[in-house]
Image (cartoon, rainbow, N blue to C red; front, side):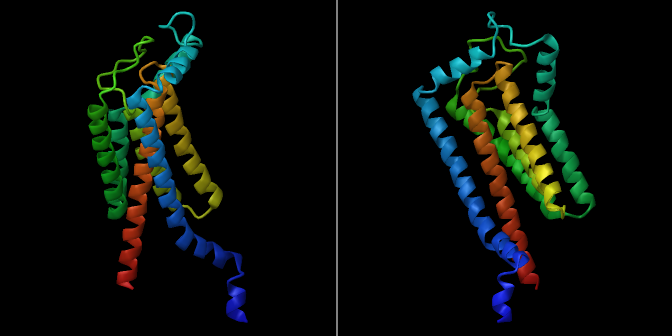
Length: 238
């Protein structure tokens, strides 16, 4: 009767759920995010999102299309937030994090972060060239832009970088509330950066939505592969 009771133990059930159910849930989440990206990309390609994009962009403008709603200090604050998703900032954050992991000899985590960020950058730039969608022309751009619009590189690469870092940090914590806080903070920063791109008039809303979906899917895929390889290594060593 003792073995039967052990399966009723909450800790035992939680351990089994994490080992068997979590990978399946992760793969399902990746599939749903990729499906959402594909749907958005298809609608963008057919021009079905124009009305939605236009309505939301203009809703964030005053009577003058060059003037975002809100006071000047708020506009400057949003510009500061959007800088957190810039290539230079994300590259610096990723390099510093990789250096920290390397100093601690956590080569697997450093390699995963490097692959996630470099791979995400390549995917983002490749898709921008493939879709070749112009930036919004309805409103003035508050900040300068140089690349094409779809998907949003800021939204995608901030999702890749901050969600991956959040997962790495959360993995080192034992308390569930602390893990939840770290992941929640990473998600919040990612969302704020994406919304800032729409407010500043440099991206269509669907650019940002597509960037979020693809960035989160890529981060989850890299984490899932790294976790699988780590467990396989541990099993082989034992």
